[in-house]
Image 1: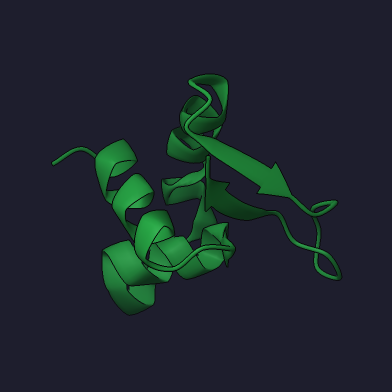
Image 2: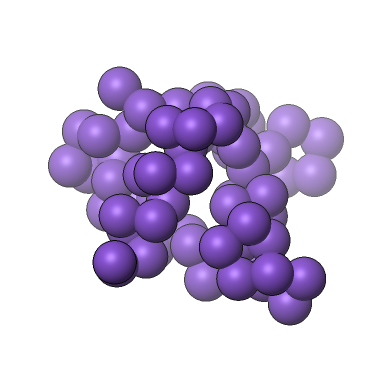
Length: 66
């Protein structure tokens, strides 16, 4: 299963996850958001997920399946 497929599955099960939450779920305690960022962007481009939030510490991006 690709990282994109795993991200999509996680977002389907738990909507509104941040990149850090996704990384921790997929890669364990050593997960970092950079591991899932390219997959999240690809899923947005493919119109499979939508991104909310402004980004950054106070209002991180969250992802929901379309």
